[in-house]
Image (cartoon, rainbow over all chains, first blue to last red; front, side, top):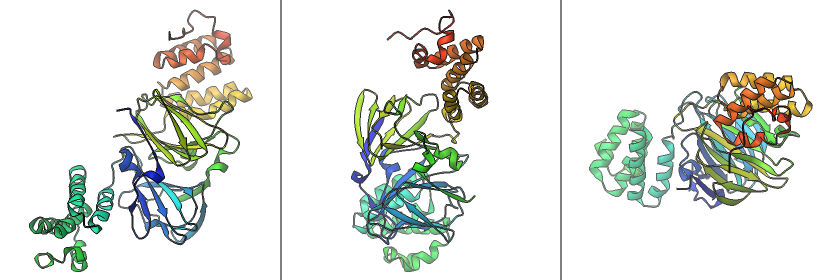
Amino acid sequence: MSGWQVARIDEIESLPGPGTLRWTPLRRHFDVRAFGINAYTAQEAGQDVVEEHTEQQLEHEELYVVLAGHATFTLDGEEVDAPAGTAVFLKDPAVRRYAVARAAGTTVLAIGGKRGEPYEPSAWEWYFAADPLIRAGRHEEAIAILEEGLAEKGEQPGIVYSLACAEALAGRREDAIAHARRAIELRPEFAEHVKSDEDLVSIRDEL
Amino acid sequence: MSWQVANIEELRGDRPEAYIRRHFDIAAFGVNAWTPREDGTIIPEHDEMSSGEEEFYLVLSGTATFALGEETVEAPTGTAIHVEPAVTRSATGPAGTTILAVGATRGEAYRPTGWEIGAPALPLFASGDYAGAKEILLGGLAAFPESPMMLYNLACAEARLGEREAALTHVARAAELDARFAGYAQTDEDLESIRDDAAFPAAVPA
């Protein structure tokens, strides 16, 4: 191993993210372990480039850098103009943040981590990586990614829930039931989700 | 403040570097942006063995030429490079090239490394404020006593101030911690006044 890797960001496979944005999983691609780092792209003006969220769960501080195009950030309801070359730092994980592209191809780099603690990759990366495979009917590949996530992160509720979905769609009924029940134990709010989640329709009567 | 915004070029001003982490007081990782100095150097040759940091470089504009170990890599805008601590790396490029550098150490809570704390001392050398530079470096060394870069720069300030013995002690210690500083010391004008001393570190044989 050379100890280094190079890639053009636009040549790394991007995946569908929340809504219409494209997620380029830089941290996963390079296996960065000391901080979170990803890129997000909106292909059309008016599309989301950073999904609306807070960082309260992970308690991350985040730095966004607009790499290309032009974004408008909304931070706790306040709009911030962010052309290429703008850095936006959110120290407070509770700030609700969101960004929309004002130009096609707007790309934003996001770097995150928790103050005072060693970085750990976030569970969402595994179920975000699995979801496009589930949508494409590649259930066994999705299951492999999610099982890798379980091995690394333990029983993170989101990973367990996504695994239940993939297994239900793959016809692994008993595994799906077990994981869906476990996901609900870990996060009781999932009990509502399963009532309307089409991925789990085959096992809903068992939950 | 809950959040802050800055334009990276404006943050840089008339310096080659934009100290992003320090500007925002980011505590979870290091991040800065670098542009070419007069000689074209963007990232000076170094490794991260003393900090253990893995680093992620992203070319924001222009085209950089990276040296990574024994390899040379051309890196146009949009190129990302991930480097493990032991790899010797450097980058050069023409005016208009900007590289974003992000770093932290696996398995450890982030803390700023020695060079960043000592960096504000460097412009004071240019203005001749060696006493001011010394004060900054002493403060930095209180947190990072084994930082070869800060020890070396402290030696330079002390040599300029005529503090011969202290300068010799500190340049020797810097060279002991990182042999490359022995090389730099051979031609550094700041150390001219003490170079003839028997205690001055010799260059490391090639």
